[in-house]
Every structure is written in C-alpha cells, then in structure tokens.
Length: 327
Ligand SMILES: Nc1ncnc2c1ncn2[C@@H]1O[C@H](COP(=O)(O)OP(=O)(O)OP(=O)(O)O)[C@@H](O)[C@H]1O
Ligand SMILES: [Mg+2]
Image 1 (spheres, rainbow, N blue to C red):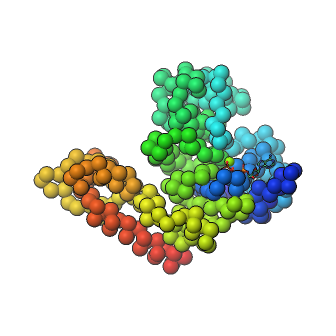
Image 2: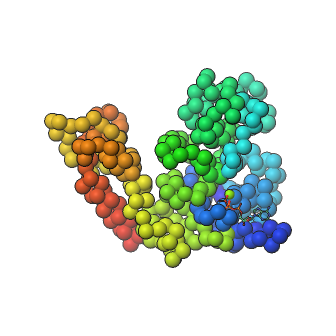
Image 3: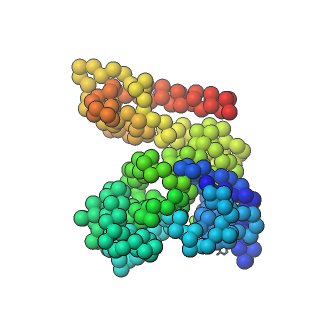
C-alpha cells in the first residue's frame, strides 16, 4: 500500500534526515517507526503526504508514484495526527473533529453527525465533550480528538506522529488498547511514530527500528526484533530488559491458568490481556494469584499465579524461536 524505494531526504542545510529507506507497508497493516530523537521519523511521515519532498528515491501509494499526485487530493486520502496534536484552540471538540469532512464539502449537519460518531468511537461522549474547547481537555483526551479527527475523512491511510506521547503510562496503555481494538474494525494502513520501544512493540504488526542517521536498522515483526536483533545497535536499543518488554506483547492464554477452586478470587483481567497488565494486577494482590475472566461470558476462566506468568513467557520465547527457525 505504501512503498518506499531508496528514499533519501537531505535538507537545504545539508542535514541528511533520511538515508536510502526502502520498506513497504501492506494494506491494513500497522507499522511503527521507532528510534531516537532526530533520527528522521517525522521526516519519513511528512514525505508520504508531501509536506516534505524526497531528495531522491520514490514513494508509491497503492502502486502510484506520489510525486505525480496532486498534493491536496493526496492528503484527502491520508489522515495525519501531528506530533503536537494540533487542534484548533478556538474551535470546539466537535468542530475540530468535523473540520476535514467539511473541507471536502460534506454538508455541515452530516459532518457533525459523523464527528459525533467518531468521538464516541474513541471513547469521548460527544454530549459531554463535543462542546468543549481543547484547553478544557486533558492531554490524553486531546490526543483522542486528534485520532478522531484523523479518522473523520475515513482515509485509507493514517500517519500518526507520537499520538499517545502526552499521557502517563497507565492512560497510555488504555489508549493503546482502545486504539488496537478500533484498528481491528477499521483496518487502516498506518504508519505510527513513537520513541517508546514498548509502544512500538505493542502496536506494530511490524516495526522499523531507526538508527541515528536516518537509516532503518531492522524491519520485522515485534517478536523477531526482540528475539533476534539484526545487529549490535538494535540489540542495545532493545536492551537487556527484553523479558520485560516481552510481557507487553504476550497475551494471557487459558493454558497459562490454574483451575479456579472453591475459594476462587474475583476476575481481575480478561483472557488476552498482556502479561504486563496481568502481572501489574498480580502485584497488587497479597494472595499471589488473580482471577482471569473469559471475555465472552465474563465468567472466571481460571487463576493466574507467578508460575503461570513464567510459563507464559517461556511459551512466548519458544514460539519466537520456532518462528525464527522456520522463516
Ligand atoms: N526543515 C528542516 N531543515 C533542516 N533540518 C531539519 C528540518 N527538519 C528536520 N531536520 C533535521 O532532520 C533530522 C530528522 O528530523 P525529524 O523531525 O524527522 O526527527 P524525528 O525522528 O521525528 O525526531 P523526534 O523524535 O525528536 O520527533 C533532525 O536532525 C532534524 O534536526
Ligand atoms: Mg518527530
């Protein structure tokens, strides 16, 4: 869907922001771009909607060279959540969300109805938040409005630059979960920038790990990046706490649970939660075990203990090893 072919960007002052990038994002795929500050992530995004023009190489969107596309037409197909959210301060939340549909000629009433739907979708009740101004929202709420606004024109492609950067880790994890659930239904083709490796790993179908100088050092599935770093740079970027990061990408399965006995606790997390969430819940319980619910029925599916977490991590490692051996 989005294809970079040997793309290099050198700014007028000689800074090479992006150096010979080649990669492809499949339709409906979410690729995260992760790397240190100044490594060229925002520049990469801006070249897709032609806010920045490559110095050499080309970018194809749906098989067509975007250099030949009309930038205005192009941007209508691409939602863009910019790094600082960028809501209009003098417009209400509803007006902000309805901006793009109205720009492309959707009648006002229809644009507002659509905006209300999208606010609902990102977890903001339009009757509560629709009439507020951005200054009257928390940072996380503003970011949700940014996401709703980017979805408003129903673009097939989304560029999201640190969309959850402004919120604390707990809210961030909730927003990430909501966003993943949303992506399951809307199936956009997404490039998402973050400098948080854990976020990259949780959200990405694949991850592009940038080096310092605008190059991609590894482009692969999260498990492969964690399990088999391509070189020393990626290995040090991924760090020694790989096991901890793996917690965030490994879901709790029924096989990890002990049967719930007569004195079973209340369910603390549903099956499919990350081990990280489950471990956080576990650490708050003196009992050293938590109940895990079947998300369909809401009933207790079993009990998770520290041994269960350990088993699940070993299972995830073994699955990664098998996958890397087989590919
Ligand atoms: N208009 C510009 N003119 C000259 N250099 C620029 C320009 N915009 C960006 N750069 C430089 O290009 C490099 C990449 O910038 P970019 O904004 O793409 O980084 P980034 O990976 O998004 O960083 P961050 O994580 O801090 O947002 C940096 O060295 C930056 O200073
Ligand atoms: Mg940036």
